[in-house]
Amino acid sequence: MNFWSPKAGPCLRLYPVLDQLIHALGGRVLLVNIDTDAHRPLARQVGVTSVPTLKLVVGGQVVETLHGYQNESELRAMLGRHLPRESDAALAEALRLYQSGDTERALMTLADAALEDPANLRIPLALAKLLVRESRHREAFKLLSTLPAEQQEEPDVRDLWVHLGFLLAAQDAPAPEVLSLRVDTDPQDLEARYLLCAHRLIQDDYPAALELLAEILRHDPDYRQGIARKALLALLGMVEDRELRARYREALNRYHH
Image (cartoon, rainbow, N blue to C red; front, side, top):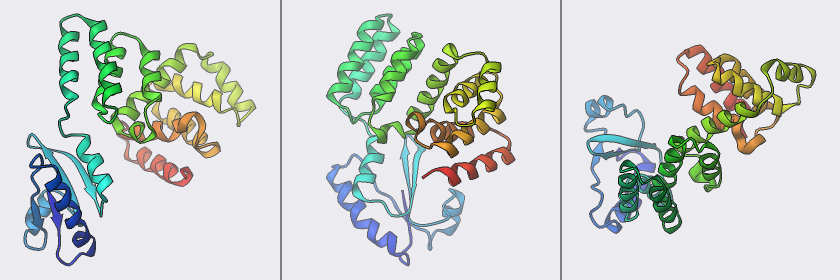
């Protein structure tokens, strides 16, 4: 659904891009244009507060929303995350094999499919999740770490990568008391902060974990492939305390470059 207004320049620039892309997809996507000036109650009902706003609906559910002007590559990336691909047949076969107990063939099928269609993010994500189910956490973490940077930014990938990273770190980390002493002795010891954060997360101590991540982000945003930013984004979606969310959302905006 394309929520637009004839009075908004970005809407007028977006429509030709959308129209050309939809025609190129040969009927795989239906474009519904909704003039928000003529249908204000409907726009408010679905939470549209600015135009243009794009909502992708699959199976009757909104699966993704984009705000503002988007170029063709950005639109193709969004659709690629949700439209069926030929390689999805291999994904379905792999899941069937796994459910029947043929784990190794299922994993091999997914690995082969990922090589044949690297743009289908559903395949390496499914492979990583199956590896986790088999307690092969290091393999899953390594797989996600080798994905292209833009795929690593996808929330499902990012959150699983963050979870696995902390899980593996906590397994081999020194005791929390030792790490706390290291942090107090040397505030620049980011490795100690990271490992201590892993302990705090396992203990469900989110305030302490968030503070440690904010300090890592402040000292070095690129530490461990930007783990502090990615972990903050993941955790902020889990924390219920509004004040806590607001505080660390501000830290995320302040220190990220």
